[in-house]
Image 1 (cartoon, rainbow, N blue to C red):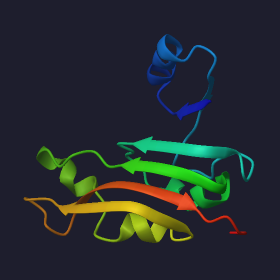
Image 2 (tube, rainbow, N blue to C red):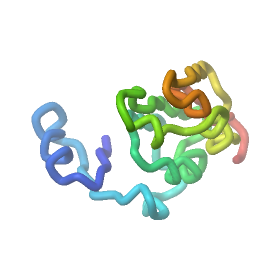
Image 3 (cartoon, rainbow, N blue to C red):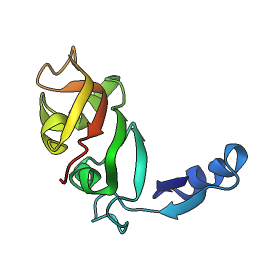
Length: 124
């Protein structure tokens, strides 16, 4: 298991539940320094930066999965949420298994997303 985050405090917390996990400081605003086909499963919960999603299809092995969830729409953080279709488009080579978008109340052009994607068995 690999745990990646830019926040060293969060990476230290991983030690409590997964002491054997490889902890890597990653900046999601930059190209991820990971080899293609490195993962069977990637989990992204409440990311602040979404540009890393362009790398995800290549990082998953064929048949691999991405579990993705945005943060909720509380207060002013709605401005940081994606627009409808942004997440599905960002990982377009992946097949959506379950994809739920919910418009926010205060900013209906922004959505919360809960999704499960799978990389197709063939190339790409």
